[in-house]
Image 1 (cartoon, one colour):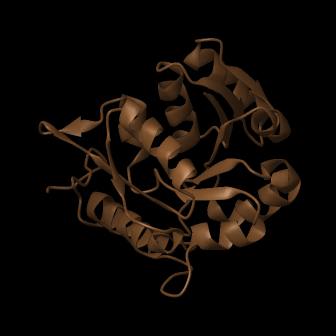
Image 2 (image 1 turned 90 degrees about the vertical axis):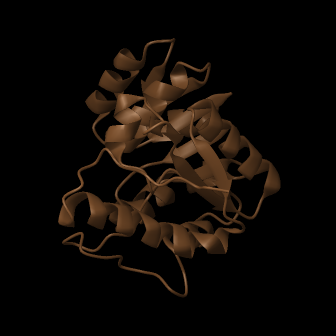
Length: 210
């Protein structure tokens, strides 16, 4: 399975490095090509780096992990190449001071992204876990798996996203159609509030008990 990373920062870089250990052929890209190169070298396992077109062109899965304000410009650049591709949206539409979300209630970042690239298969995932968890490559806390909630309208795209989630050791929790991103994104805001405003730090996560 080939994984293209758009944005090789804390989220994209960490997930890409981790996925490479499980047999994913990872191509990193970033606005600063040096960041992509560094991520590929750290990942090893025949990982590659290049521009966003390189990351998307041969990928089975594309992970979008850039700041939400940059999404529109990024998708303008690579939009045509995303036709028929699975696009995993790991973004959060935070406002400028990170005190809340800039959109919500009647839409979500994932739904807006789907509108921008209507021929892609958008799945919301990986946005409600701190990057430090991905960097640590530990998917459990206190003996329980951290839950990664995902949502999308295409069943095959969701299945391949869930496969990536479970290979990393998380519990993949199907939250339904892409509209459910409207609830997953506020969950990420709660995580940020608990971690920073409430002082619990970033070594935290949600679990799904059932």
